[in-house]
Length: 368
Image 1: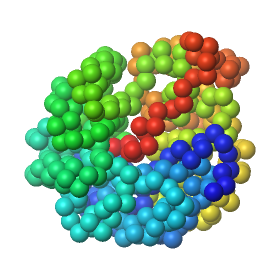
Image 2: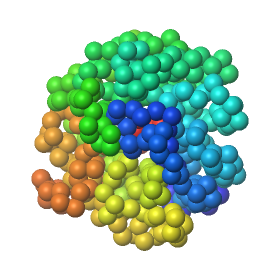
Image 3: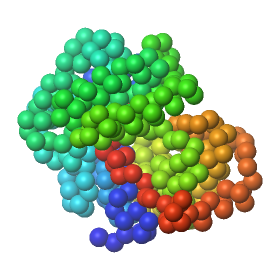
Image 4: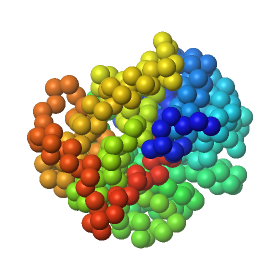
């Protein structure tokens, strides 16, 4: 298969949110999905986007939503991914794993990621469903019995930080191979959440230290925390999710949002940087203008974010996803001159070797 650029080499991630329809209305949902939503993207357009993304080097498809098992075009887009050799991962709330909807697609996913918001009482309260925790637990048991690799996604808030050790123990006991910890952000329905609070500076640092301890306590469970210490930005900036260093020709992540617009790097990025609306144009046709026009401009903004992080402007530990969105806003103010940020393209790691590539653990799931 021809690749449009060498920087991704098939490991690029295409996050696909084909619908906001969901069997739950979770308090923290960034896309405001719910059972009331009925709109969904045309399966043919999504399938075409998956094909185009694969040709551009985005060979990992992460299906999210909404609840992707409720998407009517699931079979069609899975078939498209299989035709071009893309690996497909599923992000689910777990409630439908025991149903025929999942059974029809079973065996076609590389990894299934189950959302877990804490212990039973907290999880059920956030999910707005009395037996939601039990459904996740049952889903994990079914996946394990079937030999399906799976992970757990936890939306980490100030209130759930005290349960993090218990969440990791559950994920390990259930047989998960990954625990992804994504900081709660007050976006979408989460903007009105009353039982969840974003981590403050001290809690972000505590979470980072605790994640390291949990990794030692559960060696078979890979821990991914979507937070970045400023020393990472300083010493190994290319390890940052989305950090556009050493002049790559494309971002590592593309996100297809429920309205059909594709943005780079992270859900909710300002539409000034949109790649395409798949309802109006093919991704392949829109890509050259994005890659040679908007992407180089966005790279400069991200280098500034990386430099600001390295110099501690945003504290010891930052939420990189949120910082990317902040620096992408048209009204964003720059703390450092462009020349200083551009110099990071040639910065070596502490050993003088090229910095490590971004972690592949992000391939398993989207933001939860």
